[in-house]
Length: 560
Image 1: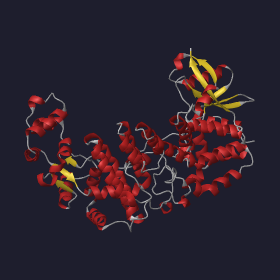
Image 2: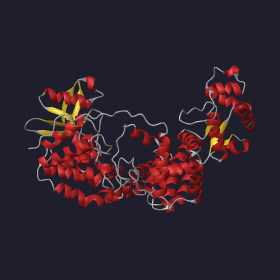
Image 3: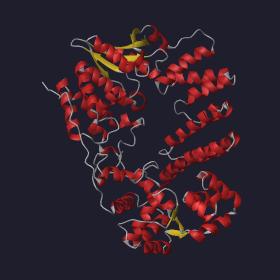
Image 4: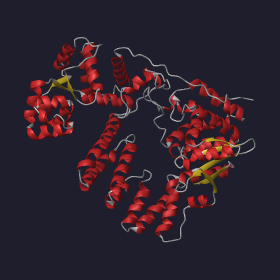
């Protein structure tokens, strides 16, 4: 019989000292990768940048890369010091000559006044604009004073008389090439550093196995454009009226009618964010307009609630009936069933309430008010049971170890750069459909729990520390995975794993908080404090466990 060690190995990271020009190596790799994978997508604007960049000597390239990795577009030249770059003033002159940076110029840069003032320290502001009487004020006060007391032209003149400030050019080209490499705007060159210093271990695909994230220029530009709209919306919230934001959204919605499928999920998330913004401001009509133009969960629920707020009861009923007929998840289904009865004026009670009312109840010490699960574990330990956390992290870790090879299979065309922690289709419906045959083939290969455990432990040993979207490298979680597998029947485990795979976004959450066990018995326990409610997804798992014959219950907790 297979024996899994009760204590997992601890993995350690050794800090690595990076070579002086590590960032140059990384940037060169990124450019080479993009040229290889996206040769047919690049336009003359980007090729021109690449030709000019490769014409620079290495130290000038390094200084430009240093600028691209810093925040903002404007930088003070005085005080620049990078030990690995020789004769920095000469490199600055080269970058100016070849158009990679530009000296501060009123006509070219007057629209960037805020960013330019941002690079000046408080001491700079006091000195340049002779504000000694305000030297004890906050920096923001000094900036406001400068804007009020001087014209933009005067500000530029005074700065140029005492400082040498430059603007980085080719920011659009660099940002877009970086975007093509990562496939999103949220990741940056820090990923290289984290890997090279040993702080994050990524699954190692060969570059030949990595495929382009975007098949067409339109795919890339649409995804880029939608990413930009999140930034614009955040800005509009602070400076525009509801009607102006709604006009902006309406124009954007029309623009996005022919949106590339790869950009659509991001746009739907933006729609949900905009709709919720209007709802929070009690602008229900605007919220309904936005929610009506997307199907992303929970837009239909929010729409139904807004319709009732405005007295449109029949429209709300129609929305609920639509959710009942074609639910996208259990939250929609249970909400529609409950809300429909509520707006019809029928005596109604949530199904989750029934489970809570019939649940067992225990009393624990008041010191556990904010750590109810810990208090419940102590309660069971005092009764002679073993107990530990089993909720989402434990199940997800089991899932990640079980399906490791399937998750990272490069043949499924879902890995696009070396720093991906998860396949790009992980949260899409096709994740399961594309891997269905492999998943069931693997599950069918296990005849007993010994084989199952051996497979998990083998993947643990081979891949310990490697970034995985499901696996948490914490010893206590491995111990709980082991116990969970030993307590349940193999067929039950297979069915739970399949259910999670069918809808990872929804079904990898809502699992019970604790696993409690003794020599002859186990049960999963969902803990609820006095003011806590049972979510629809938690109810879904309790029902499914009951259907499978998995011992599970709700436990209400009160304090003495």
